[in-house]
Image 1 (cartoon, rainbow, N blue to C red):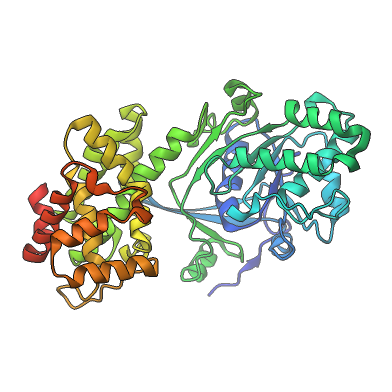
Image 2 (cartoon, rainbow, N blue to C red):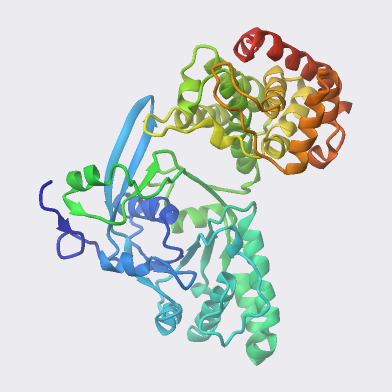
Length: 492
């Protein structure tokens, strides 16, 4: 192995740009997604901004980041237009990283910097929460929304309520309508701290509501993180001892819902990611895109997993390239689920093709069994809505989706596969017991009726969906008699 250089600004070039973004979170996802996007905007547009990272909890990685002068590499892998892609890029947009628990003065001083315009966060799903124990005088408040309100109040005071000094706030936490939830928390803290704010209360509240812009966003990129297995090979390639390499898939999508008090055009001007040729959509609403992702990415995953595993195939990519399973996946995605959404068909087809490229990633061995956890609740949120809409629109049941449900029911019988591989379902113990009891009867009519009557899963008795019970029973019988693969072939 050749001698590697340490990675820092003495050994590698680092851009110096105005600090425009405060980022709560220093983990793999933000560094491979948001910071990579900002780096691209700096390269391809006149954005000219850097990111200050704030560690949202007491223990974190800011010391590691600062140890490398916030330089690190992103390794993107996947397929693009059918071709394998494996790139390495050095990201230099993070100016510095702060720990507000040990450097609260430096954190609060960010509020005084006139060029700061954006706040971006990923503090996990639990991070956007209101904690009534937080005080305005805490240094810092324990919750992320509490820290944010402390910063906003300092900014309000420093710039005397200047309307041009409000911030554009874009949370990336994986919760539906994350911005709406964060905005609610901000309001709760302003009310909680009303007495401490005193004479500033009304003015501060109005400034926050009118001149700060909270956006709901949807983020989509698979980020496996630090590439333990390939790290030596990567370090050889880059000639640096980088301890913060982050690996991600090539696909990326960020849907940013415009805030109520700002136009799409204005937000595009301030955050020119689309201009940089990135898959960043600034839209009226993120809801249809949320539905699209759940339906066309998560929906096929949920049914392809049991169908694939029971057909003797273990890896998602191998299922995509299988002569029969590949057709089944396309049928479910393009002919069934895609027909139930309300976005332009051209847009849906492009997204569907991107999803198939992601499933077919040559660098990731995605085990289908890893998707099988809690399959019934997943089917209820990801596939059942599409099944109902398809029936309503087409006047018949979508066979691929119904077969997927029968495959889950069969998988939950347990036992072994034809080749002796174990079938080990994993779900709520009450659901598991129910399935065991139903399969013990040996009667597929009872199994079908019993599963479809589980109102604790489906929120209603779905035996009432016309023709569903009979079709599920038919597929259960076919799987027992002919095997999974032959049953799949019969519906193509």
